[in-house]
Amino acid sequence: MNRRKFIKNTALTSAGLTLGNSLMGCDEKSTEKNEAVTVASENDKKAKLPLVIATWHVEEATAKAMEVLQAGGNALDAVEQGCRVEEANEEGQSVGKGGLPDRDGNVTLDACIMDKNGNCGAVVYLQDITHAVSVARKVMEDTPHVMLAGEGAKQFAISQGFQPEDLLTEASKKDWEAWKVEAKYKPIINIENHDTIGMLAMDKNGDISGACTTSGLAYKMGGRVGDSPIIGSGLFVDNEIGAAVATGLGEEVVKTVGSFLVVELMRQGKSPQEACEEAIGRIVNKPNSNYKDFQVGYIAVNKKGETGSYSIHQWFSMTKFQDGVNEQIQSDFFNREGES
Ligand code: ASP
Image 1: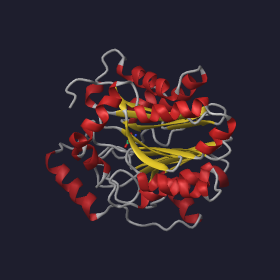
Image 2: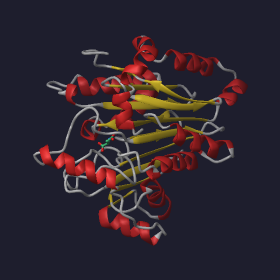
Image 3: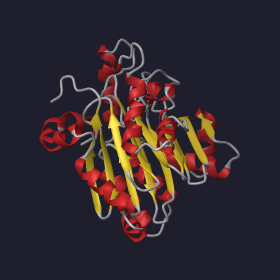
């Protein structure tokens, strides 16, 4: 089941299990775990690492990242490999191959990656290359630049051995054609029409890296780039403090420099949960904010291995793999109107 369908279809079945926890301000289970990490001795803390968190319900991706970490890989390898799982998953219509196209039928990918030393790389408006996150890593490691766009990014990828392929699957083409019938040639901006994969990993040494990959807002205008490849908006890592990654309507994340904001709030002493909540607050509390029409969600981890997640609307979730448990955690959320 793809994440969009998941958000719609599992909404009711998950409600009984998760709402109580959500109402407490953050997931009970994760709070228990976080407390365990907070008070842990150095040895206990080591036992809780490595850890991986990701936006949405992506247990295969977090499992892959954890496999890399358990095999002694570093956090950067882990987030890249984890994101690649979703990029290759043709059923996921929001990332990599099979992503929904822009309003003209072109699939264009955005991705970025950031390591423990503050190095980063990004690609925007990348076409015909499935593993945008790996191209972003190549930009970071093999060029003097941070970001490559469009045809230049594609040519760079090909020069690095990436194979071009058509990313528009039959299923996504069909959905796009159906959308065109009624769409009046406008992108859809609602609370369900997006799902970036953002992933943060902390290796056994406590070093953090992050990555973010997306096909962006479905049926966006040609040329549109969201928050996901923008360092500080879609993703930010500061190995001294922690890291954050965003999903949702990128324009709103960019306007508040969301992921950087979450990390800076953690630097000021907020927990990852509190920092995510305040960053969402910056969006919904703007004068005339039309937040009821869109979704934004953040996940974050701090240097102690504490995690948090928060969104504007219900049904955002975080997948967390730590201490042998790979689980989906429903996020607490801001908008309580029409709660189910
Ligand atoms: N943040 C992405 C964008 O605006 C969309 C998403 O989260 O799926 O492009």
